[in-house]
Image 1 (cartoon, rainbow, N blue to C red):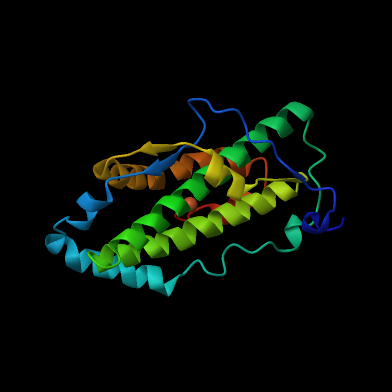
Image 2: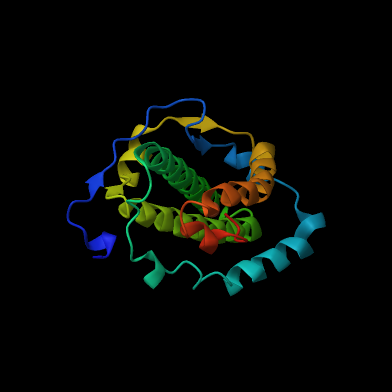
Length: 195
Ligand SMILES: [Fe+2]
């Protein structure tokens, strides 16, 4: 089969209607984070930053030969549900990328350790979003992330919830991947990754 990425029939997917389940885009109180006293956690944050810079997952998200097949074996209902799942996941990853990128930009001069950590996290989220968008191309679809950036409303999320949500997303991703794994081999690749 021709690699789906080269398929000229790829269409831009119309964004799903917003609902309670639609991933949101976020903004926060950047000042509050800039002024956070992180002195007690400095050794841990420095260790985390070192791990981020080592970038152990750099070569993990690779589309090898196993992706070179089609997914026509899925019935219509399963396929549509799965596409919706991919769209939500890709939008959520991209939303994380935008927020972390903005945090790294705004904290650069006031809280450089956190700024650097968020920069690394935005790198990873962009990578996840890109990989998921390529998975959508396997179904001849693509998300217009630039359009989403401009058209979506930004929801305020207080700093402490950003920290809680980041922690919880690490826990939830395990369950999410177990569901996806039976449908699409993409999830063999993301399993055990920070997503
Ligand atoms: Fe992610």
